[in-house]
Length: 65
Picture 1: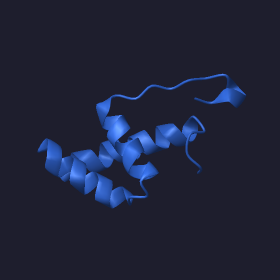
Picture 2 (picture 1 turned 90 degrees about the vertical axis):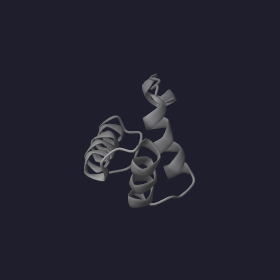
Picture 3 (picture 1 turned 45 degrees about the vertical axis):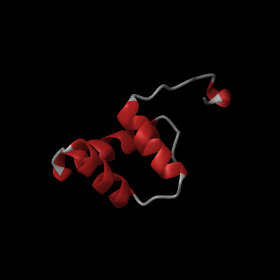
Picture 4 (picture 1 turned 60 degrees about the horizontal axis):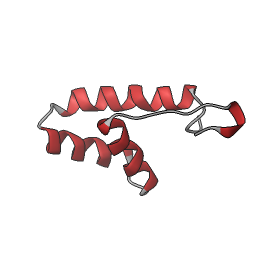
């Protein structure tokens, strides 16, 4: 929730997984590796998607640049 911009964002389960990992202080590479392993998805695909998600968070001012 961004009170300053009067906006709220929702996350799907994968986005929530990444967000929780960040909140726990995990490194991006660790989050990607764990997510790929737990979902059985190719790590290259997970890497691409996680980085795209992080860029979207930055564009929405939910993560620092």
